[in-house]
Image 1 (tube, helix red, strand yellow):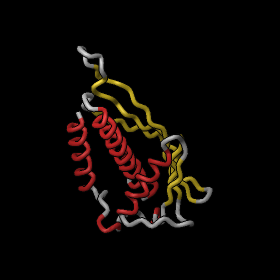
Image 2 (tube, rainbow, N blue to C red):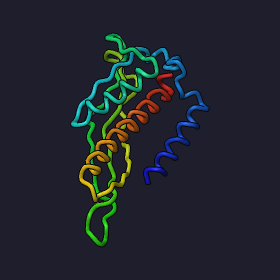
Image 3 (cartoon, helix red, strand yellow):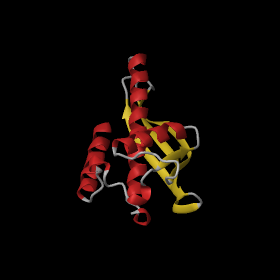
Length: 163
């Protein structure tokens, strides 16, 4: 399941690369968004904000006190079992979900009105080893936040009002 999700993400990123989404040398962040800062709220807001900031820094963005603000509100993560072993009753596959909202403002002017954010990712783990299970859970959550950061940035950087 993770492989299928990875291949879908890879295909989407490849297509976006063809339309100018990639940020070679950090030069394609629209001038209007130079200096973009990230603010967040919610139980998982800080973790998502860090993932977005890392991605922006890799792309050459340097946050500025006068820059626009990317607001991530009410960010939370939930998890539910989606596959259970019929023989042992142990959950084998989970669906992790990040929910929140995304908006961009410059001082009091709204550049991108609040839009819902929903990112889902399934993962399976080896329930035979508690240590492997914990490590897999940590890695899965890191991947989920990285994917959510990509979704946020695609939405913001490709928004017609911000180009």
